[in-house]
Length: 352
Picture 1: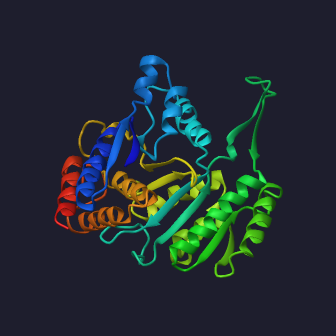
Picture 2: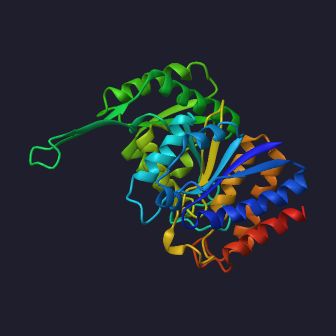
Picture 3: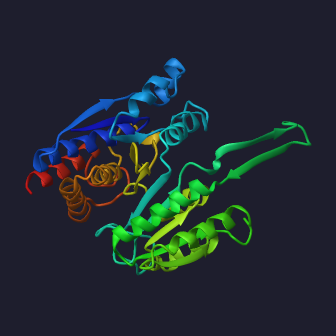
């Protein structure tokens, strides 16, 4: 029995999670898996109503779950940073979800802005360190609001944090069994302390994985090569901020945030899976948002729960629907409503 925490969140989050749960119900019947859902109303509406972000009692309950399924966090009436720091970052840090895992795969039938590139060319994974670096919140202001103001934001990188991320990336590359090539993305010519630690750790761990080819790219060069030659990449490992940036570029080359999903992973604890598109408040309640990314997040979650048959069925349903049914990945242009896309996915699974 899998105990799954469901956080629909803000904006269109509840709409796409609804379709993901519809698919989960269909695949559970087909693959004979059992699960229990525990729903939480975390997000902007709860914060505006009660002033609560992530209560300690809820955090402790989340630690008892096997996985977390998240819709989106972000509300137009809440100033930027409050929900992100108080819910998303707090969950990552408190649950020690030290890996952000982002598959970047162009599905057949999904258009990419890259000329002459297809599904065989765009199929790689970004492993992003998720609990250190610039996002840890170290720093402060001096003389704030004056002409002499100083703002300091420090990047904190520990050997333990870097090594466990790098080691995860090598192990994942082995299991993936594609090109068996791991690229470290950094900026060693400028970030001479933090990325010296990263580079030394990368090379030291590499000696334990002789079957994995290793490579290095400055982050700016890597962005160029992701556009020009995405087929070069298999698995990329990088720090928190660079990972945040390059995965947005990656989402565009795989067809947009409507198909991009990711996981915040604690290999020894509770992991969280979510679509990358955000809360998209302008589409809220219109039943036109693309739910494919949320269903892809569900597929990732099932795989991490070792429900491989269920994960394969969901992946097959996604490939079928985006290739044969949907006219576009853009909201309002899919040829179907959000709920109809969920119906198509569930119906396909039922026939398998």
